[in-house]
Length: 156
Image (cartoon, rainbow, N blue to C red; front, side):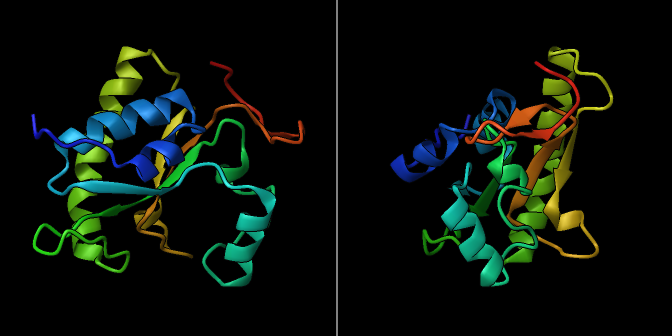
């Protein structure tokens, strides 16, 4: 056990994400080689569109997995142990965390007997728009806060 705990800001970001993603991040915090900070969980329309307009997202509201309810995506940053600060551009630290996060996910998927259609995607592995900070669960049903259906699939 690393004894790491989530900051108040990370706790706030996690409160509106899918319970499976909450479980993943809680367990990953103990397993990854770096302390973590959750930057985004659920995003409202203004935030999502601001990030889109700034080029930090390829999707407008409500098309992001951050916009499902509960959110099926989180953005996180590893914390540099020498400075105590996150560096969203440090791909070496992200790449060091991804194998542990995937291993934790495999354990969660087995424990919950998730069907193979429910998968974890890591933005660090995307070719068209690499997004090291982003992880999302695919294959779940989610609804936008406005009530519109965003994704279809397994209902847990």
